[in-house]
Image (cartoon, rainbow, N blue to C red; front, side, top):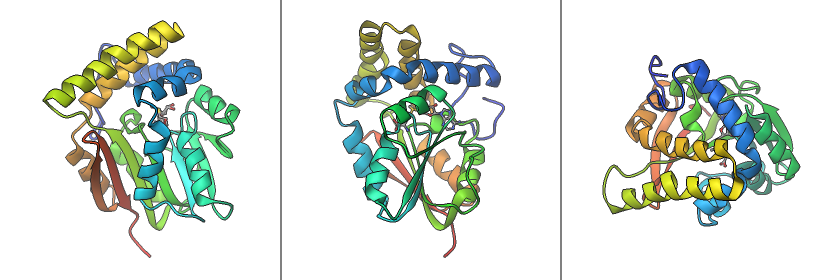
Amino acid sequence: MSENRAAPHPVLRRYYQTEAQRQAYLASSFDETAAHYDRINNWMSFGTDRWYRHQALLRAGLRPGMRFADVGCGTGLVSDIAREAVGPEGWVVSVDPSIGMLGEAVARGRVTWPLRGKAEHLPLGDESVDFLCMAFALRHVVDLELAFREYLRVLKPGGRLLLLEMTPPRRGLLRALLKMHMRYVIPVMTRLLTRSRTATVLYEYCWDTFDQCVPPEKVLDALASAGMASPSRFVSAQIFSEYTADRPGR
Ligand SMILES: C[S@@+](CC[C@H](N)C(=O)[O-])C[C@H]1O[C@@H](n2cnc3c(N)ncnc32)[C@H](O)[C@@H]1O
């Protein structure tokens, strides 16, 4: 990953050495963890996972009638919320590279139009959506600018981008508590309750990627370099970054 100009985090050698190994690691880990993902997320967020995503989508301007893309949809939580919000006049397309995740999203009845694909090369037409959201998946793209240029392509002029990520504080008590919870408590609970070593290691990896992620200024710079208008960041509960930007025009 280090060879990329705008990689979201440095190479994490505990998990992979090369970009090909990173891709393979992510694919197998998300596939194998998919069945446990909702349960673990629910513990991790103390039951606020759905509520928080809903609030963030409304804050960013999701409205009835919009054409919406959920990129890195996982088990489809954001898609499900968006389907309700856009109503019968809008539609929602849900994209993820993991067959396991897409399978869970379909099985849970949360997605109408599931598609296999990656942020860097979306299976969507030019200027096809009003709103594109990527929730807690930005750290997995190969290059921020590459993904943002692809978002620019599929957004209609004036369309809105929302990126949700966690940004742990660099120091202090909140950081210590968050690290304890996410890097140690959640992996141990995952091991005990799912017996899946893959899922356990994935949650350790998750913290490491949150922690090693490039600072918010770099994400905002990459949005601007990709050609997005008005990139900005709203911080919620001191740890959640909500990046918004618009496709210029209209
Ligand atoms: C932590 S989950 C987030 C799922 C969901 N968005 C949510 O809010 O719960 C990260 C997801 O990103 C997907 N992913 C990994 N690499 C990706 C890429 N290059 N483009 C899009 N999605 C990717 C994974 O398969 C996984 O489903």
